[in-house]
Image (cartoon, rainbow, N blue to C red):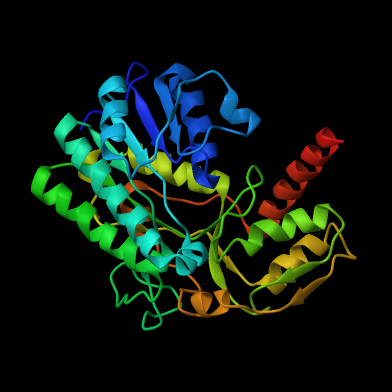
Length: 325
């Protein structure tokens, strides 16, 4: 497949979410705002999402509307990011399955029918389950997810691989760990404590964590997630050996460790622990990830450590708080 040029159009579905917001901005910086179409089920609220650049209201479950948007803009690349996350999907399982699966089918079918060159679809560490080796979880291993989100993501991986084999569609995917960024609030994921905890620290408030203090989970700072996504999408097709979804790692830490990292800046910051239903989800997920296939195939290399991420998160959140006053 040819790589995207500045004259090509890119469609980002779910552009208002945690990842979509920042990915849309990054793509517009690279390819020009007019060449990147943001689409979401809600109109943009964030200032950065209101910059020059096309926006379309789109519910990915509305197949006719999706095809209308794709026929209008004729995108060469589609980033399909709309999904119901882990904890939220457990509360509304049938809708979680419908959004995560039917939305993916609509995008894949439209891409095949309309000649889209590349599709990006995110998977997650939620595809793993309680039978999976928790330390240094391999690319290929026992999975058996026990959440609706994980089940839908595992099924989605297999369908993406099938569309590649059956239709030659260049679908690419990453199994994201928990994503941490300062531009959006938590969105209903089990790893979202690692976003909320920074907001509480900057606001001078104590934080009540819904996970136990020694619960290790794989995490990633948003700039690394953006870099990995774009590195994957810009890699030559021949380099992409995994057509289900690549393991992706950066760092693993516990609530206790992120608290200590924050206390380097806020010594009086206090955290208490009251585990809820999300603890059982976290217990079924990996504690660390083997991402050697991504490193080998397309040169993945993370840039942020826990303390480096903390320094950057707190800097930006303090700047945002100052601007809001």
